[in-house]
Structures are given as structure tokens and as C-alpha cells.
Image (cartoon, rainbow, N blue to C red; front, side, top):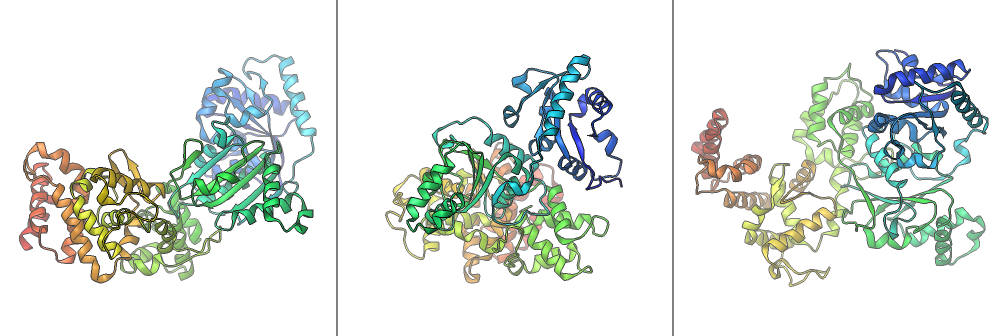
Length: 588
């Protein structure tokens, strides 16, 4: 495996799309001929190497990064990713309309117009002179940038390159509203996805873009946090005791034209932070929050769980294992079982690592099937020193919904369905059952209004009450909305089920079963094609709730629903699956 030596330094790094290889080769040839030391992938990368790490290393070891701007270059996320965090950038406008090929972060740099395939000697000489001017400038050292950040970077940061790109380009786009004059974006997701890790990695990757980087923890008192920033800006203010005066001073400084990065971590909602966001100047602000109901005045980036391949990579790297020593199918099965949630993956990897080399991912998966509660309650200090376990990470969010018993009842009932889109109409059809479940959850009848002043479920139409409940769940990233459907993460469902008292589980399964049963059409029958538009989206939920109900020994309406489900599957020529449910119905 060929690797780049860490102490090797280069003058230039050529960033290009593979579709523009002839132009890139011509550029590299002329630069080398002019005496420059160039990092060029065709000369540096060999088969079998970790190309991503090699390219990262090449970027860090090069003084000037030269992107060959064409329509193809802009279409590649990797060319943009390797460009934006460079010490110095000299974009080469080679092809296409400038407005079409230029990305927002590059608008702040001086461009050079040159087509490597047709340029004259005079044009080449101008380019060489521009490169030499950049190389003559003193190097920017990381220590020269004032960084007041929390946490260390995650050594196993994987699968988020596109999110970093999206975040960077959004911050460098022009302002869209009063609140975003300085460049503000909210990174939101449910707990455990890695919002804080993403913000910290952004600071690590793009530190050269800012003179100063600052961190505020919104879980603390914001007045005190901004007063602390004032002391960073002017140490003499440590003698001042008036927190308001110091916080206002910090806001004035953040409104200046100096390029700063402000990360405000763990924000509760928009109202709580609005006063503290710089409205003008050169400060870029990243907000991390579980709150998703931001107004149109705030740019937002919704972060999702990892894709399967990065999830596998995270499990292997965090556990100290390799693809050569582990059964990859077991790793992938575990990642899927944990819903690709980074927090859960890190906890599982830590457990595997601590158990020793003889303990495999297959062993963990087998243990997880028997001991979900204990394993999900295991807290692991990760790169962000985040102590919460999967079991506890969503409790703060649910506390925000304490008074919305209908929303919490929907969440608990849906824990017994599949983690696929759930029809909202199914809930509306069984609104009285939902109200009964909400009262059961509250332990007492629902009051006419809850503490937030919103109408109680009884005072609204079924559709409006359910829409409000789903809206509240979505606002705090507990569900995702898909038009007339919604869905929730499988680990949210698991935690919801685990938190139900043992003596109440059967009651909740029966309530969830009745809601599905009421929505399944009896006329026309399941083997009539006219009923299929309803049965088809319900199929995974019917199978899941029937499995729970069968395990709990609930016979009615389980046996009839099993028979109807079998008729539907048989009509779709899925005879083996149909036979299974017919046999279970007969047994019940």
C-alpha cells in the first residue's frame, strides 16, 4: 500500500473531476515543468491505497490548492470537500459560465482564467506568477487562530462529508433574512445522530476560514456564556461583574466584520436563542438542536442517521477491529439492528472493544437480542464527552412534551408498528382510542388545556388534534413527516417499548392492535384488488403488531386479522407467507 509521507510538503494540490483528466494532466505537466512540487493523484495514488486518507493528507501538506473549475468539478462532492479547507486557494476557471461553476465559498477568492488545453505561454507565465505570490506569503499556523472550542475531534468521523459540504456552502451563501445576516444555520436531528460531533468537525476542517472560533453551551445560562465570550475578547472585562453589560459587549464584537465562527450547542428552540444570534458582520453561527420547527428566517440542515457503509466503518474503527478479522455480515446486521444511529453504534463498539478480541459483533448481536434494556442503558464517553446512553438521550426531549399526552401516546402506540411510514388516516379513524391511550398515559383525564396553552385533544377535530400532536413530535425530531404519513426510528420504538411498565405492556399492545384492525378494510375483502391500496402500506405494520400481539397472547382480534392478512398475501401470490399466518390463525 502506497502512502503519502507525513513530512512531505507540496507547493500545489490539483483538484479536478475525473472527466477533466486531459486538462488536469496538461496543468500538472506545466506546473512541474515550471519547478513547482505538485500533489497530483495520478502520480501519487496507487492501487490498494486508502484514497480518501491519501487525498486528505495531500491537501494538508500542500500550500496552495488549485481547483480546475468546470461544470464537472462542481458536480463532484469530493473536489469541493478537498478544496474548501485549504490554506490558500487559487481557482482556475477552465470551462463553463462562471456563475454556473463557482460555488459560494470560492466567491471570496481571486480566480484565474485559464484553459490548460489552449493557454498561451503568456497566460501560463501569469498563472505561475500568481502561484509564487501565494507561496511567498507566510504560512497560517493553527495556533495563530484563536480557538475556544469544547470537546476533541472524533477520530472515527465517517460518512458526513456531504453534510460538511452542505453546511459550509450554506454559511457562505448570501443572507436570506434578517436573522441570517451574519450567516446562520441550524443543524437539527434527534438525539444520538451526532450534531455536536458534526459542528466540532466543521471547526476542525475549516479553521483556516476564521480568525476566531468560539463555543457556547446553550444548556448553561446563555447570559453567563456570552459574558464569558466578552472576557475572551477583552480579558480586562474579568473585573466587571455586570453579566448583561459583558454579554452585550460580546454581541457587539460578534457583529463586527472579523471572520469568526460561533457554535451554539444544544439549543432548546428558536425563541430561546434568537436574541443571541449575531445579526450582521463576519460571524458565522452554527446552532445544534433537536428542535426542528425553525422559522423560514433560519437556514436549516437536517442530519440523518448514517448510511450502511459508514455505519460499518464506524463500528470497526471504534472497536479497533478490521474487515479482515470480523464477519462483515454480523457487523452489517448489528448496524441495521441499531438503526445506523451513531450513538448506539459507538456504544456497541465500545462494549465489543472492552470485552476483548474473542468477543465478536455476532456475540454482541446475540446478547443484544436478550438484553436490550441493559445494553441501551450503557453510557459511553465518546469524542464529545457525551455521557448519555441511548435510553436516556431522548428523555430531555420527551420532557418537553410532558403536557402533550396525545403526542406521547401516539409515540408509544407506534412503538408496536414497523419503522416504515405510518398512515396518519389510521390514527384519525381511531381517535377515541387515542384519547383513551392519552388518558392512560397521563394517569388522569385530560384537562381542557395543557400547560402550554394549546387546545386539548377533546376540543379539536380529530384531524387537527392529531396534526398538532404529530407537529409537536416532528418539532423535536422524534418523528419524520412524509406528507400524509410519518415514521420514527426503530431505536425510538425500542426505547418506548422498554419504558412501558411490565404490567401495562399488554394493554398498550391491545390498543395498538385495535387501531390497525379498525383501519383494515372488511369490505371489500382482502383478496379483492380494490382493498389493496389500504392493505399495501399497512402490510409491515400488520405483520409487526400481529407478532407483538401473538407474543402477548392476545386472541381477539388477532386471529381474524391474521386470517385477513393471509388472504391479502395469498391474493398477491405470496403463498408461503400467507400459509404462515393461516396456520397461526388456526392455532389461536
